[in-house]
Every structure is written in structure tokens, then in C-alpha cells.
Length: 170
Image (cartoon, rainbow, N blue to C red; front, side, top):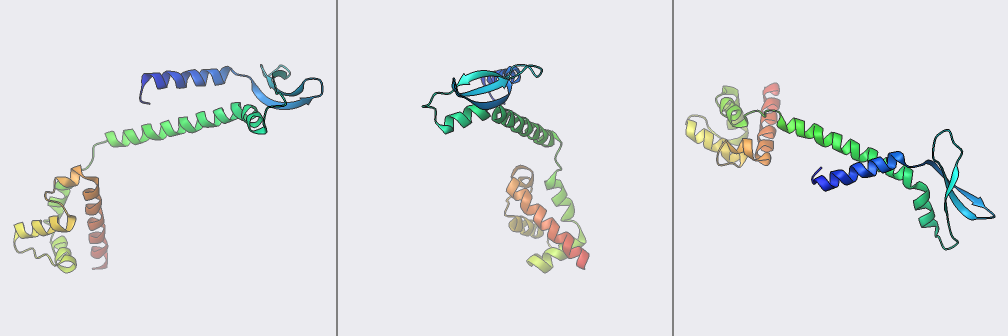
């Protein structure tokens, strides 16, 4: 969560929700009009908390009647979203493979050289021309971009996947 004020407000909302009455219901009292009732404590009977006037529209009535359950739903969704964010942050903190180094190593592989010649027309007789051809296929100027540009890393993964498929069929 970004700002300290937002975190503090969310904590306040959680506390307010946890302390609030539960089991909200609407009852029609001929003497008092429609009332919203709730249980202050689980062992106590429901008591009238709000009396709705005749001017209260059904939209506001439904909003009030379902507010406690709706807030609980949103707090649960928010907790799940925060859990997923923390999970993703942990994944990002894990060391990533050095794709530039992997590319350099695989470019030395004889079968990869055959694959690049057959599928992309890149001969491997000149090491520098071969490296230039691989970079051109990957749309990069330097292998280091594989570690810094997600789109380049994706293109490398696709090329590597095609190479592995080709190798299985060979």
C-alpha cells in the first residue's frame, strides 16, 4: 500500500467494520415505518438501528441494508489482492537467469547453429556474422537487452522454444 495515510484509513475501516453490528435486516413496523435492525452482540436479540423515512428510495435502503456484508466482501477481496501482490513481489526479488549469458552459450551449440541456418538462413561459418544474425532475429542490438527488456526476453523465449521443438523433431 502506497501512502501511510491510506494504510491508516484502511486499518480504521477494518477496525470499524469489525466492531460494527452484524446480521442487518429490514423489518416493517406499522408503528415506526421500515427499520433496519442488527445484532450488537451475537448472543443478543436484534435491535432497531435506523428508521427509514418514506422518502428513502429502494437504492439507499438496499445500500444501507447490505453495507456491512458488502464491506466485508471488499475487505476480503482487498486482502486477497494484497496477498497476490506480495507473492509477485517475492517472485521479482528472486534472482533472474542471465539470458544474455544463456544466449551466448546456446549460440555455440552446433544444433542451434543448424536450426538458425535452416529456419532463418543464418550461416555459422563466421562467428560475428552469426551473432549479428541472431541479434537481428531477436530485434536487439546487444544480448544484454535480453536481461533488461521484457519484450526482448519474450522473443528469446519464443526462439528457444522453437529451437527445442525443432530439435525434438530432428
